[in-house]
Length: 99
Image (cartoon, rainbow, N blue to C red; front, side):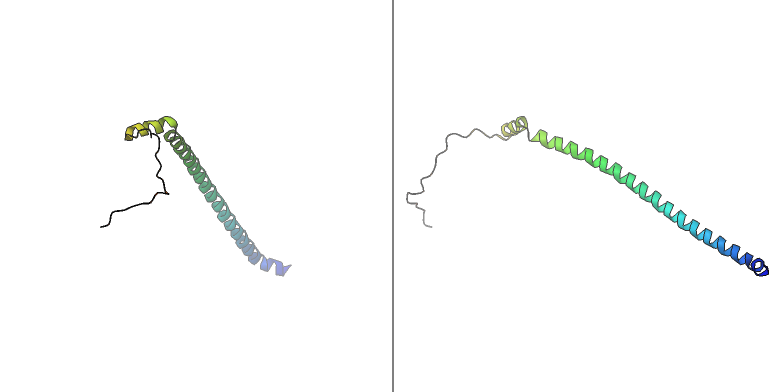
């Protein structure tokens, strides 16, 4: 009994140290979880913004590849319809000028 009372202070200090150690581990874990949650929320909002931007770009691509847009671009750069093609006969002898 006397031994227990003499070592009671040591036991209480050791118990307090263990509790403080466990508490610090818990606080570190909670802090890591909160930080990870904040990063996930930030990345999700960035992903949503990028998805919207991708949809806008896909719409712009579809509009620029539409038949009306292609016809307008053809007229704008001055292309004309091709007539009937004339093919070169490859079996005839070929000549070139000497220099």
